[in-house]
Amino acid sequence: MRVYRVESSGFCWGVAEAIDKALEISKRNQGPVYSYGPLVHNRQVMSELESQQIFGVDPSSEGIAGSATGTIVVRAHGVRPEVIAELEEREKQTGARFHDLTCPLVKMVHNVIAGNAKRGIDNVIVGDADHAEVLGLVGYGLPGRTHVVANPEQAAALPPLERVCVVSQTTQDYANFRATADVVRKQAQLYREVNTICRPTKERQEETELMARRVRTMVVVGGRHSANTVRLVELLHGWGCRPLHVETESELRAEDFAGLEEVGLTAGASTPLWMIERVEERLASFGARERLTLSSIARSAGAALVNTNLWVAAGAAGLAAAASTLQQIPLRWEFLAAPALFVMSMHTLNRFVDRSRLDFTDRVATLLYKRHPVPLLAVGAAAGLASVGIAALLGLLPFALALLGLACGCIYGMRVLPEAITYRFGIRRLKDFPASRDLSTAVGWAMMTAVLPFLTLKTLPGTVNLLTFLAVFFLVFLRTMALGVRDVAGDKIVGVETVFKALGPRSTARLATLMILALGGSLATLAFAFHAPGALALSALVPYVALYTLVFFRAGPPRGFLGELVTDGQNLVAGGIVAALQRGIF
Image (cartoon, rainbow, N blue to C red; front, side, top):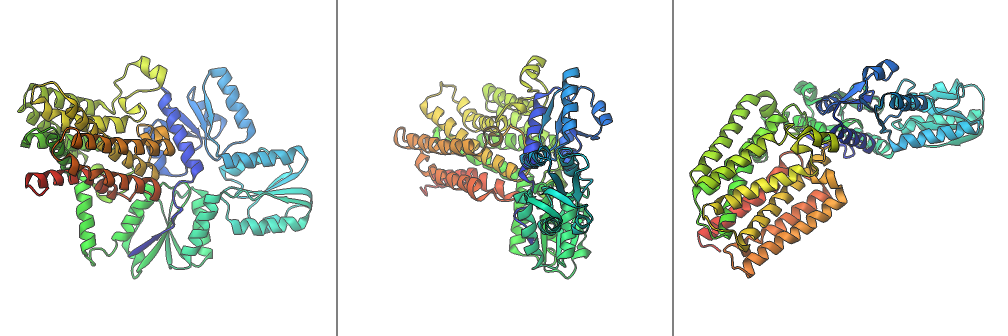
């Protein structure tokens, strides 16, 4: 079955920014962070946020009191001005901080309503009276002169208005806003209108309507308590398209799509892209067994290789072969096996630690790491121990290096830092350091692929060894940086352990450009200044890396496991070049 997805699906930028800021606040705090009401109307995302010590509290005085002296954040929906005053007073009395994460567009609506109130102008808000955003908007208007209407019928029941301004809930349906505002216009003597529907909402509704005209059924992904998601369902009914509202892919049933050759897919503003992609993959799988194709077989094989970490392990072996060749160290099987098993172990164990997170976009990964975690833990531990054991065959120094790498990898996500560092910098784990994931991955790979074979020589390192280390470091850093772009683009809950989140898109793009140039410079120096074997042939990796980096940043990263297939493919290419050199092809 063919699946057509609305391209504007995913978190709106206001929700994404609120989540990012809440994560930063949580990292700095020693205690939990409480959101004034759920930070986002999505149970799966809230479950992940709770694992990051971010909890939603009842938006009432009792809820605030229940948070004791914990930090409070105001969610993107915004609140009434008296709530802000209450939180400020709480901060003065208890020292408990609060942060206002209200969406900037919602704040703009606050200002419009408050400005009208100061000038004695009535406000009419087109929206749902019980929605969190609307409850906050009402607080900025004049009591008794701020009206909430959901549709033209309610607008017709308004009393005569002398001077009035019509605004909208930011996630309102534009057609309904237009019709309702026209009714108010006819009843007012002096009329003003401010269309405050946010652009992403309008684009999502327009794209969904276009999609509804071409398919008979559309799946809507989002929380059942999400107003904008429920509104999409209502709109689809009005457009004559059958909607199926689900929160996760597990709610999909094949019989609901019997006889369909195509289906549309859309989602609310509180639904992350990774959840949408999981639903999309599940939909695409319906009927796949009956129509087994070369493409589906290749896709299944690719998913298996990536999600079992065999692909990344093979890449580590290829990179190790390239590093040994550049340093003119005769290849040994231990030089390939130890890094491959080490990398496989680290990736498997880290996924095991993060198995409670629901951001696996691939159903195979979900099956492996959420339903069968114990066998994966055993495989990861066995691979790590085997890596250390193989390194021991090479000597004491390689053994010590592998053991140190395994220990550092295991404690990366654990709270091992002194309380003084945690108190002063808000950093509890090695993982909390900015860009730590990208840096630690690049250093770990470079140590195991380039330094480990060199340690068997028992000589001091030279320029060739340093340049080889740097070339490997740049390759792995660029690979991990690109995957960080993929994670953020997929609305995953990612902290500043990635360069992309620590520096931002522009600075990360500049850094990637500099590293690609440095990679090319390292290999060129090895080739022309030191005549390192294979350096010139391995320079073919530079355009490969530059191309996928450009695609990830400009066109958008590939979905699911395809990101790893592309980025780790560079290391397999390196291994292939070395194999060709060994056979005298180059």
